[in-house]
Image (cartoon, rainbow, N blue to C red; front, side, top):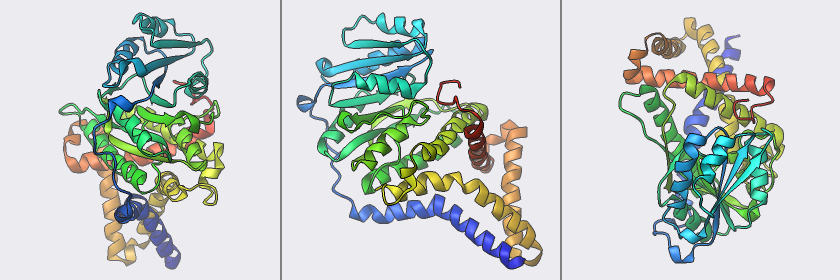
Length: 384
């Protein structure tokens, strides 16, 4: 019996270590084999093509005016920017806010039926004739140079289908939830940037990315994570996807775990759905970026199971081993600090409490995401 639990612990621990440390280490090892970095120069505005900025919005009347203005005022030739706003459902307030700008470069595409972002994206992109598309959300503020940098990256490498921008969180002082999430997001951005340099970035930052129009294939209307499936379909077709840290979109992080919980559950349910919608992503014969997709996406989905196995094995083996006794105490300490953060919110200002709480909550979100994937078929609809 002890042998069984020992092997179970080793296997589970190996899975967790590979997911969070082994895979990043492998990426780091590949850095010496990188192609020369071509992103250091400033964008050449004289060689930039006409682009279409595609925004899908719903109930965003208070956001859409400033967002469209920020796109049109980017440091990019003004006569080469078009904005296509797709309204998901009956939302006259958002449409009127966009039309109030009275700019001929802005087109509003109305959809009377609330179908979700993916369906609206398919329709909007079908109407675009521009070589390069900029996909962005209604909420985030764009750096003035962001669009130019994304276009430059695509122009420099014809093998690229998509280039992700960087989402930068503006964390208010004293926002301890936001600080914990920002630390996690910095780790995530490093992974995406390095994946893009080594092979292909696994998924885009939905707040801002550039897409080569010729590489787009329509996605199922029920898709939750369009910003992952769109570029990964292009990767399956032989393109690459990358990341440009110079192209920045600014946002505020979730200010409470409840707010972050809703966002993450939807995202993680979308990760489970990706495998259902596109099984080729987990087929190493068909997916050139299989190692990255498996390591970055699939491995994380199974870490709650691995952590539970480690906890159970430690409890069984603790009476006969100091190592497993220490492992059990460490696990219980992390759980206890997470409970303390929940019961006494003021303790989140302490780094060990904040990190423990973020670690536990993030893995609980995976479980909630799986359950939501099983029971909620309307998640692709905003607020579904």
